[in-house]
Image 1 (cartoon, rainbow, N blue to C red):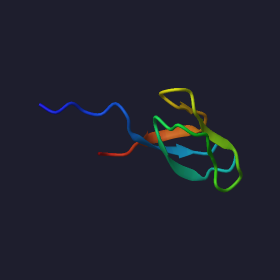
Image 2 (cartoon, rainbow, N blue to C red):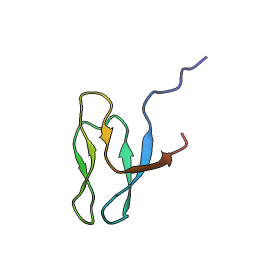
Image 3 (cartoon, rainbow, N blue to C red):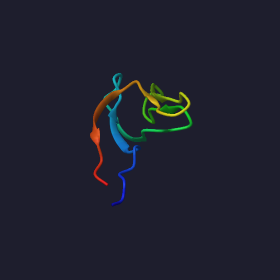
Image 4 (tube, helix red, strand yellow):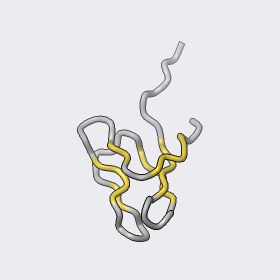
Length: 60
């Protein structure tokens, strides 16, 4: 039996402009919106702090 990974790719929407972005759940860098520059995900050691609206996880 193969265990499922604990990390995933998330679809996140910017709270300021509404732009959608794909973010890794365990990102090691801060992720900014490409349109307005708003912070979407902040690095925090292991699991990133998602600051935008999470729309859902992408299927693996």
